[in-house]
Structure formats: C-alpha cells, structure tokens
Length: 102
Image (tube, rainbow, N blue to C red; front, top):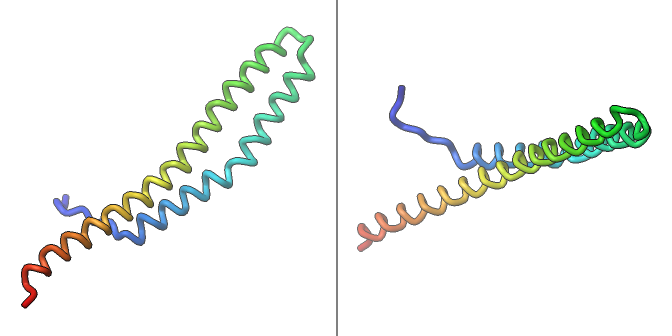
C-alpha cells in the first residue's frame, strides 16, 4: 500500500458536483414515493392498518429526505475540500517561492 494519497482538485470537484446533482435529482422521486404512501394511508384510514401505513410513510419521509440531504451535503463538502486544499497548496507554494526571490 502506498503511503502517498493524492486526489486531484478537479476530481474532488467533479465528485462533489455529481453528488450534489444526485441529491437534487432524488428530490422529486422522494416526494413522489412519500406522497404515494401518504395517499394510500389516507385512503385506508378506516382500516386497521391505515394508521400503521401513515406512520410508515412518515418514517420513510424522514429517512429518504435525510438521505437525500446528506448526499447533497457531501457534494458541498467535497467541493469545499478541493477548494481548501488548493488554497493551502497555493499558499505553501507562494511561501517557499518568496524565499528564492532575488
């Protein structure tokens, strides 16, 4: 195993962009799935399992929306990481370069 880890800024930003896009793309699908469950629960309210279906819809809404949000947030963090690493590398480079100016 190599003791060097290097991920190009461009790849981090691309991964961040892709992750963010997945989070955005999931939004209508999550809404549609949860709405279908809530509609079914509403239609079965008078049945013995209608309340359980309503509870399940609420739980799935929380879980799926949380997942979608975390996926989008991970994209932001990947982009922030790339920007931070590039900024740090640039400052380090500038610091060493100044020592050799004449």
